[in-house]
Length: 171
Image (cartoon, rainbow, N blue to C red; front, side, top):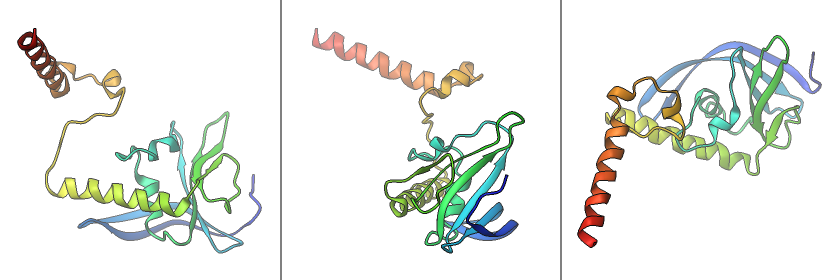
């Protein structure tokens, strides 16, 4: 199915970029240039993906937010193209100009890109400094098969023990 308004398509274009002092070579699946000269970056996926994972400060699935930093002034949307046998669809976020089905409109698109830049910069700096703080996202422990060696459980146990000691001192 074709979309109206896209008039130029680039596929599999390799580009270089930097976040913090880290250099990346990236290959964008598809970039559509729209009639208004803005671009939509599309990444094809066959498994389950969700653009909601781009909204936390610790971005899950940072690939497309990273791509948005390639040309932040011309990108009007980022989208996964879910290639599911029964249900092919877009899932993404963009500005009001992109007008693509299932692309959520950002309240402030340029601010969103700036937030991604800042969050990815922080993650990049932490990586460079060797910071590996154990800080899983909510519900991550549900899917983890390493509970027997988990430092999160140890940290929670220490915190719980400290709170109990504090309560005993107060009593």
